[in-house]
Length: 96
Image (tube, rainbow, N blue to C red):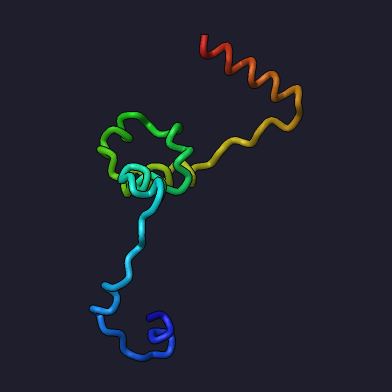
């Protein structure tokens, strides 16, 4: 099909219906399939809980929220080991 398109030849629209992405293994689980397609999903931890709940599990909306986090400016990490230790201790104190 791609060869025909590349060569400028016509493609029967019904021909494309013969091709389908096959789901196997873990991808057979709808939740795994949906959330497995979200890029940068690990950044879900930085989302506002109310905004996340408002998505009602819609992977497209979750992707948009995750993209906002991915595109936001992030602070530079500490430049020295001593600064890193001080930052860690300061963060631990704020959790108490």
